[in-house]
Image (cartoon, rainbow, N blue to C red):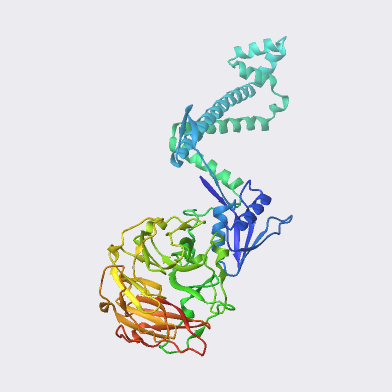
Length: 556
């Protein structure tokens, strides 16, 4: 097969198409692009214009400011006739028999055909040269005895008798006819010399043609010279550019560096990704930097993800949706982001957790507000669907609060809003399908609820953060493993506040803290002291009056 691709160039945030593939209708192409944009199969296009005129085709595709033009090009090549494929079946007749040949065999058969043509042409030319030489020899012989020839012709009553008389003199029938057809001007000495010279050249030509028939290498040389002459005569500049090497489209990931980014989801359903360098590490207790959420909006979840990772979006009612991290528009600390319904139109409930996934090995561990837990193979979530799928069944008064990726042999930690925690083996929760409800993970006291979960592979310290801006680290050795379903132990003194996030961390991790008034701070956790379970901790961020901490994300 041969791929034919449109000629285009990227200029800033515009894609300019100057040529389209053979047999592609421009009007239909433009309609197709517009339709795919409406259906959101192609994202990132802001406008489409046809600026073609008598001088040629010019299609201008304007790319949105937050989109990557190379990614848009990749989508256009995949979904439209800006790139088409022509199938080739090398089915040919070889000696009257149908055969499918590869390129080498095609070239061999072409050379064989050219050789056959050359031999037949040479034989034809040789025959003609010999015939002409025979006649020229007769004419030269006749001119050497021209007086006798004239008398013979004059004494003959008819041309037929003259021809017979010439044959009697030793001329062939062809030569006799040529002599009788000869004009008187041939009797000049100049014409006689010309015939002698022609005879000599015919002798050389016959020798050349005989050598060509005898010498195969000479025939190949002749074929090469003929092809070079065709190239010289017709070989003008190519109108189609040949791309060396593979012509397969690059994967989108090939166009995007796989770097870590911050992804922030707000309670009103706006999402954006920010570069890590937007957040420089600061000492604990600092004021942090301002981050905008929009009027009355607050952060719902924040994660650190690689651009090539999938992000799974888990809704409060237990469904899950997919996006690639790079599909989330890049923003700044002061931008609001994009409404998630614009990226996931089928989503029908509030997203409470976003989980980055680089591969679909291991398990997903679910925790609900009322303390129910469930474990499901991550491979059951490896087939992205635009409509989403159900992740778990929930009781009417319950909702999903956290999701973790586990390996299958870890300890699970559940943390509650008012300072209770439980540690139990992951094996205590059997693997269930997506449609299952789960089992009890922790028993809750009145008014309390589960806020987060962690797996032991995430670190050796429990980092807990209060809405008042205080936080601490506690060694996981202080959390004894028990059977699931108990009350657990107290893990922090809330002192009139409540826990907004608890997570397992390592000595080298950092944490990004977000507040209600839009402040954020990035803190190295080795600056946070390790304290006992009953301590309140140390000040992590200086809060202004009326402000409080809402969420935090770990940076590994």
